[in-house]
Image 1: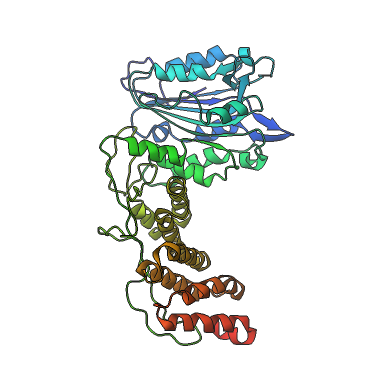
Image 2: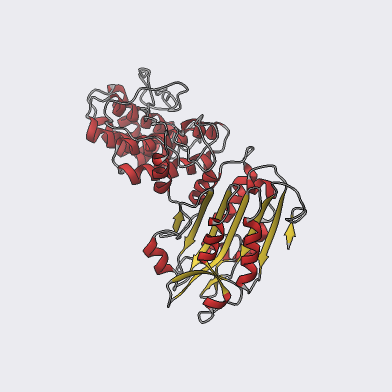
Length: 461
């Protein structure tokens, strides 16, 4: 079945090609782990030019229910031979030939005994992509490995052969045989593919493939142990290895720069108004951070002002993009991108590092902008305690974190939630002798009022 206009071979130069392959479904205990036909049908509704990321004429071919691997190979060769850009999507069940320890994409009707004859060898897919000589290519996979293939995937830690192919960007997820059926939407569009489609339809300007992958993997609700290709750490390492990439130092994140005003004992106080962590100009590197890490988002994110080229990964500061998303009311996307960025930083520098704490502070400010003052207060308090351990009580960043936590806490109107966050915040304020004493007095009086129901009524708006 073909969509998108005239086929290859009509004499049109630089025609792009989209090939969507639906392999065999993965089923476990009556539950559908991945429904490749549903995934392909949903992806086929996206215009070919959007999938390719350019406006050249393009063909789209969907393969579903195919039983002969040679038929798939023929279609692959036609797609790879296209002079224009190429987008290949593969969804289904990943299996293995137990004798030869080779991976296969199971096709319709594949059984354990017919793998070598009715499945597409993984090396065929990689070999055809390797033979491509012109034009950029993107490969996206959404697979579930069965019990025969999962040990191989775990042993290699990746999908073999995709990394390092010239001109090819490869992204995707491989879930294990024990994945809950809920991640596959019980036979519906699987989470990772659905997020690719949603992000393409939501963004006013098409995001880069790297950004689509980061957002999709972060939003799909993937089960623990899912193989993500490439991972956040792999993207960061790839960016660091790029020749001539800029080393971008992290900037200190501050909540309150002005001296707070004294506050009354009860009621919503005029607590210090936080200053956004998203400064427009350059900010000096904190002296507490030695050999700072690149504050990088794994992907070329619009709005970062960084350089990018075909197949490259941009190293840049994500705060401008996060701020733009938050100001535009897209708080969920901002939170996802911040969490994925934080994950990569934690993997490289550790959860208690200065770089990781800065990520926590960014998430705290994003929560404040979204009106989630409970999360913001909790995150700011955690950042304050973390900084206190290795910066000391006299550090301005520690006081800023405490002031930010106090401000957000005073905006929490739910008594139970305020009681949950308050004690840890009060403990932090008591540990800071250089903090404005009015801050501690306010927090103690408010916490006492919250613990006394009749007095806490005055805290309601």
